[in-house]
Amino acid sequence: MRTALVTAVAGTVVAFLLGLLTFGVQATVHPHDVPLAVVAPPPIAERVKAADSAEVDIRVVSAAEAQTLLADKDVYGVLEISPGQATIRLNPAVNPSGTQVAQQVLTGVAQGAGLPVKVETRAVTAAERTAPLAASALLWVGGMIAGLLFVVLKGRRFRWLAALTTAVLVEGSVVGLLAWWGVTFTAEALTFMLAVAVSFALLQAGLFKHLGIRAMGVLGVLYLMAPAVAGQVPELLNPAYRAVLWSWTPFRFSTEGLRSLMYDGSISTEWWVFGGIALVGLVLLAMKKTELAGEEAQPDRADGVVDVGVHEADGLPRAEHQHTA
Image (cartoon, rainbow, N blue to C red; front, side, top):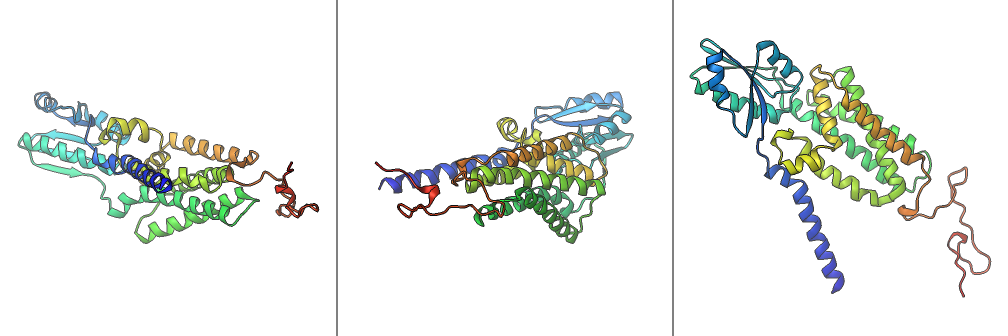
């Protein structure tokens, strides 16, 4: 009876927490201070600025400043108003969720001024919109499954080599899959994907080394909750989710970094993030294995086989022999 109650409560708690950390992110999406830019003559600019609200942050800027803000992804869209015409400019390197909100809001502003609207942006296919987040998730899953199988099959040596091999092969399969969908990448984007794959695989291998199969409790939950957060822009997230999840999840950096590089953009912070993750993984792999993985801390022989042996007195393996009173 007690076991039945404990397992039922545990399942309920896990379901609640996963719902809170995954579907809760999507259920509470609402725009907060979405940054937009407007280029317009002074009289019209003042009327447009009056449309500012808690949902959007409208900035009245010059044409040159608007181009810079959009290129740097500091705004999600630009509305340029000229006599008899309104043009909305969008950057395909910006998260699609952000550009969708920007286009809706700016279209409403232009129509409110009684102007016809023209949208200028590079055409983006559904596959290209999906690719950055899909690649990030698949690179994580590939490394996670490989690390899990390494534990299940009782692999002991060359974890780092297994991780690097996994990273290369998984990236190749992901690039092939996305190419089949019609998505192409720049050389820098491919290099960045390899860096992401290597850092994920090394970190996962390090956690599996010290936690064994228990590492799935960490890696699996990260996979379930992070993509839901990484697929959104921070201005659409509930402030609590933005601070607790979005601020640190590696999926956010890999998704946004890859999206930028797909459209000939540049990144800097993302390289440091994944360099740091790879370093943490290497440190974990270099550390002496703890007994958290449920394995005895015994030195491995050169051939990778643990010498257990049999105790002559009672027939028990030496590593498990205990003195009894």
